Length: 97
Image 1 (cartoon, rainbow, N blue to C red):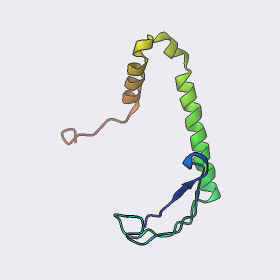
Image 2 (spheres, rainbow, N blue to C red):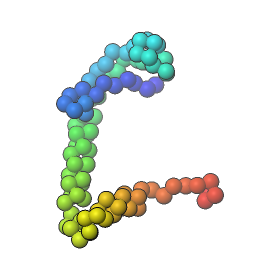
Image 3 (cartoon, helix red, strand yellow):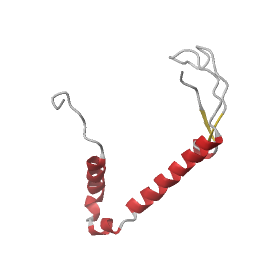
C-alpha cells in the first residue's frame, strides 16, 4: 500500500512529517483515497539528509574539477551533457534481448 507524504521543512525537502489521509474527490485524486501517512522515522530523515549532503559534495567536486578549465567556454555545456549521457546505464532495447 502506498502512503501519502508531506514534504515539510525549508525548501520542501527538510523532513517528511505525518499527514492526514483524504477521501476520493477531496484533493482531486485520480487514484482514490489517500491513507494517513505516519511520516518518516528519524533514521529515514537522517539517511535522506546524508544522501542529500553527499549529492551536494559530489556536485561541487564535479563542477569545480580542474578539467573544466581545459574545455573551451562555449563547449562546457555540451561536454557536461556528454559526460551525463555516458554515465547513464545503457538502455536495453527489444532487439538486444
